[in-house]
Length: 438
Image (cartoon, rainbow, N blue to C red; front, side, top):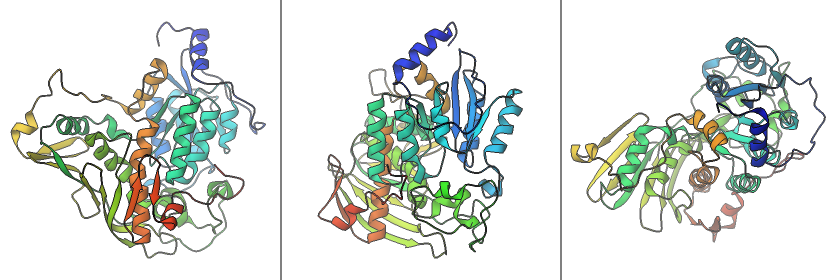
């Protein structure tokens, strides 16, 4: 970034995206723009992961956070019962930077209306990802969006198409793409160290953990002051407000997320795809689904589950809450297993095997957030492109459809259609409550 003047920087960013058409009249006074040699950023969703993402981006000397946005001003129900919202996020920015002038919004469209914002970090519940991401792409913003990418397969397809059409830089919050142990694991597999792969085992957590300390608060109560609950629901069905429904525990209700299958599946299934070299495709069948679902007034996602994704090559991907956590590749000549920051192999020879200069070396990123900023400046692909994330989470979505219907599925990864099962095929999308259609 050194030596890049403001006009040069702006011309580069203008080349990345089209002009921003007016969307709405801003409802708040705008904050001050960042110095011309920094990427200006807004964080949309400052509850769970968004607050953590904000902390990380504030550490990057090339970034100036100029706006935060959340439908909740301030309240409990987030990780470990903590208090989050736009007000704590605003205080964090001022505390870390020592500067005033960061703007706060409750409507993400106000953020996108600001022509002085280069990039956005989207960390809202899954059911809002598609609408905000598509609007952000059309507004010409560079986008970091948390996983799971989408609530449905069809939403993921629309997101990927919109981002590619807009030509903006995209990074999915699939941080394991920047984990050296997983990269090493996948390089061993891709370079044939375990021979021909026949089985991949993906172990995901089960249950519906009470991360927000609100699972017992299921009675309908008044919406807290400062929380726009109607906006939080968005395209999801009408539902009475209760603390158990919102905050971090939203992920245990199919109206807003896909439970552990998508929450962790977006990570570990993604590693299975990477190791198999299937980043831009997927399986042809989902078989043997078995699921037990939450018995709770609000939560209804699977607490125990297993299913098999079968590829055209014959490789079988087993996804289960009973498998050892992480990802295990089994081949004709041995196996390798990995989780975050650690990996194992069936022999020391495989474990210590060097990857030769002329062998396949996978994309190397040492810091996921910084990689996003690197790619805004360089125009190179990010570690976790949107189409790759879409293909990975599609397997999790198909798994949930199989679990919910109790049926095996035939899948065409080229047309992205479930074959010979119209009821299951209809579940690739959802009804969007007006006016929040995608």
